[in-house]
Length: 86
Image 1 (cartoon, one colour):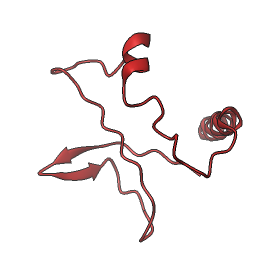
Image 2 (cartoon, rainbow, N blue to C red):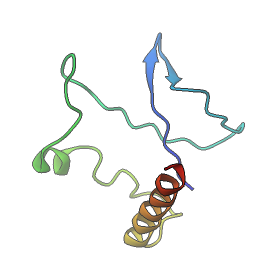
Image 3 (cartoon, rainbow, N blue to C red):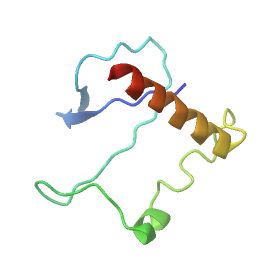
Image 4 (spheres, rainbow, N blue to C red):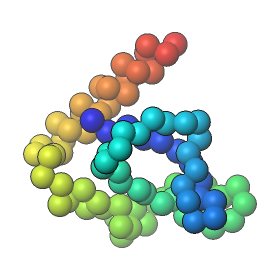
């Protein structure tokens, strides 16, 4: 299962919004979103996305067989969480 947490880096350490309870030894993946200035958008153009390090980020993961099915499962899980929250 994949869960996303948001935070910022302060003094070289990641500070999460809220207090996520992460078990000792949990495997984590960190994706850094660079901003070019105050209030900058984190969005990428199609070309910039295709040329970025994000493409192929999970290529070496052996726990994701069918990437389309995996993405579909993540979308379904997020829709259930959003629906339950409202």
